[in-house]
Image 1 (cartoon, rainbow, N blue to C red):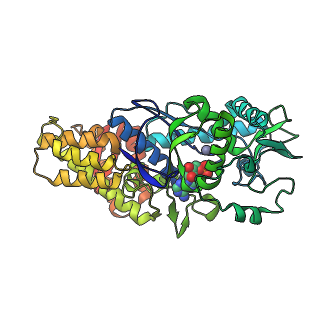
Image 2 (cartoon, protein in one colour):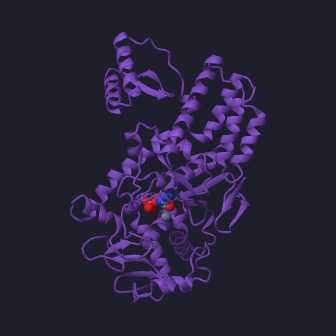
Length: 461
Ligand code: AMP
Ligand code: ZN
């Protein structure tokens, strides 16, 4: 199994820290709003990595944090943090309790998104606000070892004390010094970053004064607690590599004295929209709710994400998502046909296609090429029951729910058929409002309608 390691900038053979086991950590969302589909691309990458390791027989421990407090508006140490902004946006008083309450709402919404995209639930889902003591412990160790200093607004990590600071790359330290000069004159070095920020009005008590942990320390605190001082894989979007992850390495390695903190750093490229990274601030606030408004199955987004390797940037347009939905529906239809043909007998996984598939997934999680193997297999002349078995096997990695996609043969009562006919007409006339209304009525009457390749499929609820 080979993985591209951002640390060495090479594909490396994977050697686990502990035989047969994989510990992996994903930088989770800052829950100040619903996550957008760019964020979800990064989390899907984590899900595919976990599934590939599991199909390979590893015992995986997956940790994804929820960032619910802190001073985190940007990589810098200044400005309003995102959670404070969320409270202002929603007209709520700025208190720690409100911050945590609002975060809980969006954390739940995030968990719904993970389910809608068929992502496996991480084994640990720690919230930053529950791990303040872990952060304080690390900062104390750094202080004892002489890696920190205190200014009027916080406790800072002294980057000059770490010989290989910035080893993940992406930081031009000279430039970093120039461009940030004047932002915080009290810092020894502009690359130094906050471990703890003072806040007189709210926050937690600490040996240095009331306040909040820095953004970077939260991940060191949670990863260390659940995965130990050294672990296998750490992921995140490529935008986190240069500052957040270099800083996480600095804190963890200097506090524990263990290096490397993480053996394999894996970074997912960005989802772009209209020529720029998709983000709320650039007007690209596309969420799974936006997809539902257009009647798009969230799994069509999963299927779309599977078509670009995680290390390549991906451009989003509604048109390509719609064609992914058509493509996915075609796959479901093929699966239904195979089920019918084989009388629902699941045969044996085809050895040839299995080894082709594995050669792709074990080569730096190449899902797009694995998907190409799937399509070739579906077109091949192997028997329907073996095709079904092979498709279900591949789907342990793809996560498209193929084996759950069974057809229930039901007698449709006449009144239901009338509504279905009306809905068909509404859809032909592109009257989505009417079509949604009829879908809701059918649901109230105990029937779920799915739209597959412009045909309506009905299931009993
Ligand atoms: P945040 O909530 O901003 O901390 O981001 C959560 C995760 O989403 C991080 O791993 C980011 O790197 C990732 N991310 C943010 N924007 C995008 C994007 N447009 N495409 C892919 N990943 C993104
Ligand atoms: Zn992080």
